[in-house]
Picture 1 (tube, rainbow, N blue to C red):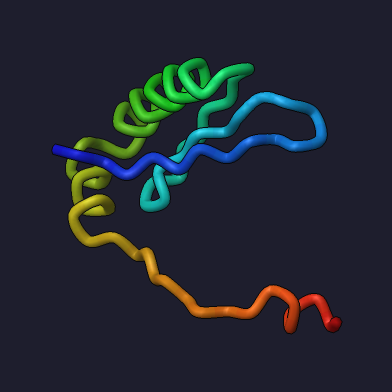
Picture 2 (picture 1 turned 120 degrees about the vertical axis):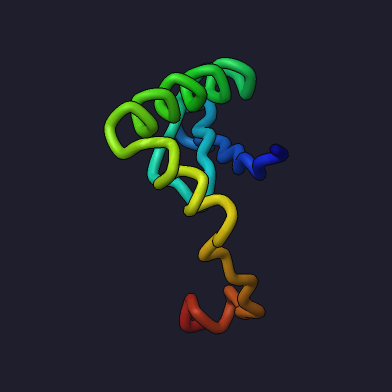
Length: 77
């Protein structure tokens, strides 16, 4: 199964956050690879707590939406 992992750079402190958009689990690290490894451990914990069926249901029925927003308009400029 292929999963979409979002990698978010921390522009203020440095390092990265990795997350799966459909499962509330996050990983952090100094590099992208470290953040992904931490996310893998967080996913293990999620599955241990909530079960594999819950995790699979979330990724097979994702809640992602793509929105066409103008960020300049949101800023009030």
